[in-house]
Image (cartoon, rainbow, N blue to C red):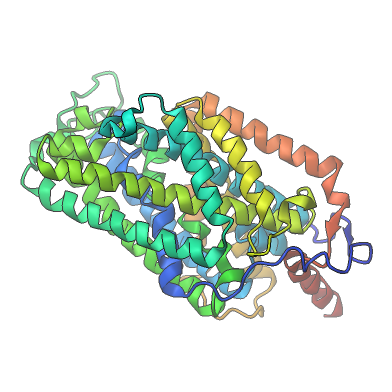
Length: 474
């Protein structure tokens, strides 16, 4: 796809255009970035993953999780290279813009935006379930909770990135303590037989005690295995606000991935072994139910709420930065990228939040989860293609960090990501279909309108245009 497949403008934008669209740099080192990566995902340890046992049994979800963990590790190794080479707030969109041109950049950014706009809506429904189970404030109708979390945490983000990242780090640390308490308590209730208590379906090909729904169950469990790691790839979105992003962003994303692999294994085995595969497959609060009625269950229930809040809080940050980057470059309405006196993008926080709140009112957490996974999987495909293209086409590009294994590593991630896209249709074709329709609507907007109004002065466009100029000189 040609770099110059869309019109860019630079002379007709106001002199203060970028001054009104500036983030606060130097707000985060690698510790806060690693905390951000964990906070994006940690709610997936507390709720949502267990629905995959209903699709594939413990064995199906276990195999799917191992494969997906390998995909994510390969993917973040590739993204570590790209984020060090191209440190900008656009993250995956910036990488694809350089490799695949405006169409590829916008398609990637749109897929990421769909993931990050929908995921908080799913998490809000899980927060509502936790609040109701705790009987907090006498709330029995979740929509009040959904409204409160959107209003509160968007408000905190409007105060600035440094303050928001520090608050996220504290909440994430509390959530990790909750997982430790759960692990210690669940160990005494663990029973190996509970892992395989779902009866095998005699009509499923390859069904067994380990794979009660057969081989297809592994595939159907893939979207829920993704929930263990969904959004960790968002760490590069903080590149413009990080200190020394060439070193700290790769370090942050890799450390967060290793932590999440450990917590995912602990939760999958101990929660299922304590409660039983059949019972946990439909639970809205799996860790708490796995601990029964003892005191640890109530502690984990309260801390689990912190885990869900951590992910909600951090993904609000992610969708705002993706919206900001696309808007600043002209792919979305430029008003969305204007920042306030605290250098926070106001409308980029509010507009996707209003849309997400509307989606949360459906109360369909599992459906929204699958919609978010569809957007994520599409973006993974495009980002891995971007890494491969840049390695082949621009071997001399400055790369402070290089992916071990090169394109073989990201090629593996690309294949699994393609499988994941198809798997979302297998689990919930309606949810995947609606998300695909939204994706196509964004592309239509780009084709008809915004591709003629790109802003060449934006950092993401400059990366691509400089590469084009260098190519022409050579």
